[in-house]
Image (cartoon, helix red, strand yellow):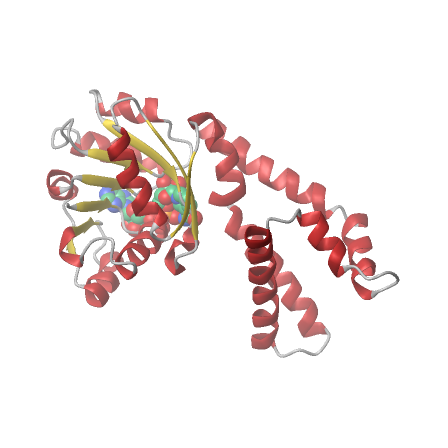
Length: 265
Ligand code: NAD
């Protein structure tokens, strides 16, 4: 099986690193194009993958082809490769706001499309992806793509109308989490903790808390209550977060990203 990527920016590099680290395909089965060679150079040096500046070559050779360019570049790239793409190949789109119908229209013919919204923690094997597909993709083919995305994190099948929600919560989500880590660390530094240690304390606290939610299956509110001793330190902090409107700030932020994704489509 040949897996191709057109565009080798942040998201593609995260996915390719995840895929090769987990040995889903061998480096020789992976082909990547990017007009700027420096973008593919690091992966080529590290893993020995095949790289090119020719998108058509990648389109021709791939059984599964991931379009990992920015949404506004999709029309140009699809126009460039559409004559090379056959109805046997699986096209994976990962762009915010590009519906399967829009991608199909740009191809101008029946193509198998799996639409995915991944996120950058794929780089460390902890990605979160939402996937859906059009009617030309068989169950077996969908499972194959699903397995690829599961190799570097969690992957859930969703219906396309839920893509906006997925962009809001997990596609864009890492950025909000990094902001939270920075803010926690800044406060710890203000209290005297060295900067490097502050990031470790803050990030590990997020990682551990996330694992508690996923692994215990307990309600997040219940887990929060278990940290809040009566008249203790934590409930003081919780009180401040509620007064400052943390929950509504997060809800509005996630909704804004989801709305933007909808508008892009
Ligand atoms: P990026 O800008 O880091 O990468 C895009 C790459 O495409 C660049 O390396 C650029 O040189 C290359 N490129 C530009 N024109 C090209 C062309 N004509 N042919 C081939 N390559 C070309 O962007 P990114 O953050 O990796 O995002 C890529 C896609 O992934 C976007 O559609 C985005 O919506 C989606 N996405 C990104 C994230 C994220 O967290 N970054 C999360 C989910 C989905």
